[in-house]
Image 1 (cartoon, rainbow, N blue to C red):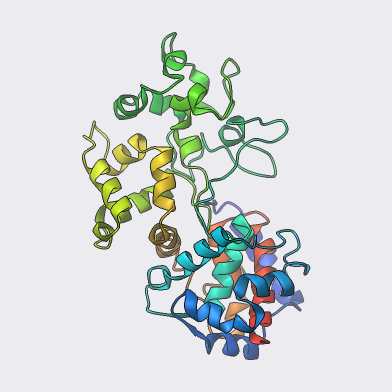
Image 2 (cartoon, one colour; image 1 turned 180 degrees about the vertical axis):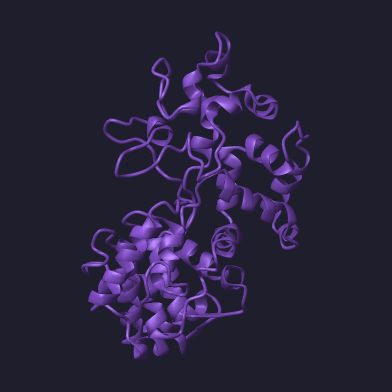
Length: 358
């Protein structure tokens, strides 16, 4: 998810206060112990926690009810989650651009997954709908204190529904879906270009009613994956990855997706924007269902946001504030703003200490 830099001054002040008061620090001994545990895949991770029944069992019995984690609770203990956990962590070379990582980086990234989707390292598209913001209204409008509008949002790079409903490529790809004629036959409502849902339209999350509307950016590019990748800009990075990475032809699902996207004719927009507009929710669910894309979503996001995956090895830097590159707070701040860093960093610190104590 993206954030603006408008609150950077407040971040700096908060960092200074945090550094002055910081009692909750990871000490150098814990850092060194975690960095001394090499991990090249899920087998290494499970071996480290074998005496406790594997990582998920260890986490559920050791950390899930502690103060930093109690708002997220236990990781579901079932075969599907276990399979997805192993599939994701078998992508360590793709996540960290190295043949192996260590328990320090594992703990930090795993806490992101626990915060975003309760440790189910999966596609997990962002759910929509809450009191006062039913169905699609949730994604379309700004919800004070919770989220920005996904329809009008410069930080995300999303095209408004109004722009898409007039875009030749979008219309060519999606006009056969339910809701098309309701949107266009009597003139397109200008409210589709705002952050206020057009009141004459149902907000039901049902493709048989709103299929044409649901392929718009505000819904299609909602959060997906381990770090809840959000918005046309970040999805566009994954489009480039799928279209250009030499590993893709070895994956049947992604190779088929690449061929489909490559066949889209450009209609005045860039190839990336053409693919973004014509791609579908179903295609993105397939893409994020592949471990390599879940991994790439983190690796590519880190690459374009100051390499936040590269954590420092010294306690002073690792415990630094949101503007200190190499710190846990820097990583969390690059992923999301608001209260997110203050929720997830204590989780990271608690897990680092717990692994070091094994």
